[in-house]
Amino acid sequence: MTKLNYSVILHVMGILLVFNGLFISVGVLTSWYYGEMQTLSQMLIAFLIVLILGIMLMFFTRNHDKDISTKEGYLIVTLGWIFMALSGSLPYLITNSIPSFTNAFFETISGYTTTGATIIEDIEILPKGILIWRSLTHWIGGMGIIVLTIAILPMFGIGGMQLFTAEAPGLNTDKLKPRITDTAKRLWLIYFSFTAVETLLLHIAGMSLFDAVNHALSTLSTGGFSTKNASIAYWNDNYWIQYIIIVFMFMSGTNFVLFYLAFKLKLKRLFENEEFRWYLLFVGSATLITFFTVYYQGDLSLSSTQHPMLLGKAEATFRHALFQVVAVVTTTGFITSDFTAWLPFVSIFFFGLYFLGGSAGSTAGGVKIVRQVFLIKNGILEFKRILHPNAILPMRYNGKSVDQKIVYNVLGFFILYMLSFIVGTLVLSFLGLDFMTSVGAAASSLGNVGPAFGDVSPVDNYNGLPHLAKWWCSFLMLIGRLELFTVLILFTSYFWKKY
Image (spheres, rainbow, N blue to C red):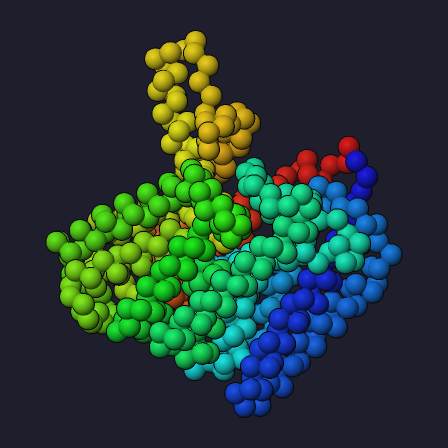
């Protein structure tokens, strides 16, 4: 094993900084359009700093080795997210929208990991240039900074397959095209198209164009940042807006490869996909359980948000139940109601949903539906193996036998995920948080959901957490978004050994 090629790693960091700078320029243009002259000049400074740093890194490492090893791929993925978060904090700091570096980094890493946890007390007083940048951090992170890099890196003569493997270890989805670059470009085209369509529909339904753009960016990325303090509850008197967001949250939690196949008129493949069928089952069942519980035993008015019964109590209860279930399962984290105020059963039930996650190949975080399906099937097979110890009973998924190595990988991931949750909770508790807040913040950060329980409930935020707790939650967001192994492997001694 040769030593790590830090030159190529830094070169990729330079490329990422340049692209981050270009996205910051959207905030610059937004400030110009809305006449925010002070914010315009400050955003321009942030844009130039990030852009120049990126160009300098690319220039001084231009004579790099173009091959990327597996180890370098993992380092690039992790460092890429950290570099993007550090540079993405500058607009908040320079405009004084978030004066604290800890808070600015927390808000930015929450954006890029599409967690949607926020420390901002009053979102509505922020300049529009900052609001659009805040939503863009979601949109960039949604399909993955690394996917963006894969689509662009060939222009610079760098192969990208190692990066793709590092971003999604363990489970391989169908390839759209033999070349990974083509795959990334097609995924981004679908992603951009859905964003544009949702923006148009939300605007037609009654949102301002600015709000529609921001919420489309947050929805497609399953992020959850809003331009309103009340999140989507601000539009509780407009059921069209909420149903549109429900549809696009659900779509964003679906494997994007299935949409590509659907566009090629292979709609049957969508419903033949076993994960998609389980996804429908989980969301449908959870919605019905929540609906009947709240309708017959609870009361929407227990929440601090207003709930106009425009089409009657049944429709309002169903809509809010469906919205919150989809928001939690897809890890989007938008809210139309404080579900923790409904009934204790609902809070416990929703806490379980925090460990579900969306589909593999979607923008959602969490454990992922496919892993849950593997765990269920493996559990059933274990009962059969006990009764028939000599029988060969392979697991089948989508009509095919599953390699036992993949099953072990899923089991290993789930064990590591639960250990990370337990350790995460213990650390937050040690830092002074109460039990409900510690459990909720750990589960929410690791699963990239956003709102949780206790002091970080849907109607609260993370601003009251101690600084060390914010850094710890930021770490949990990062490892959760990058599927644990990608980051945690860097803390092992054998990763750094030379063979």
